[in-house]
Length: 169
Image (cartoon, rainbow, N blue to C red; front, side):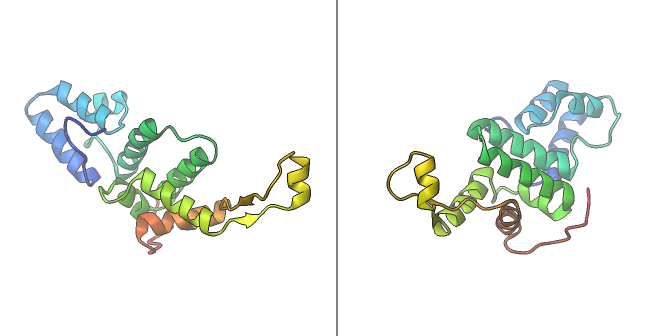
């Protein structure tokens, strides 16, 4: 996943690495750095051409990490929805975007936190529903709704500290 440059713990680390490559005139390395961190080639070109002062912002660094992690995980259905909830939280909160980029946190870890809640809070499905679904036996279901998922995601990435919810990036 982060094979050439390693996993960066912050957007600042990515920008320092990009600045070092730029100082060396190694544009190829900047493109590789961007690709490895889920950053668009166009953003790398803008940085190389001095159209931007930095390769990434806190938000683009967070989105890049999520893109790289999602590529390996290939989330679908509810997990894809959870990924979108994480992205929404990053757009709403600077502390969340910073936390997503942290080496200590991962998309897989967040999904594990959501599944842990799901298993602990599963409730039996009504028999009439099971009958209509042509399912025999007992079935339990515990998928968190959007509000609960948002709280679990926030708790996972911010260690239970909401942070500044209104600090847009």
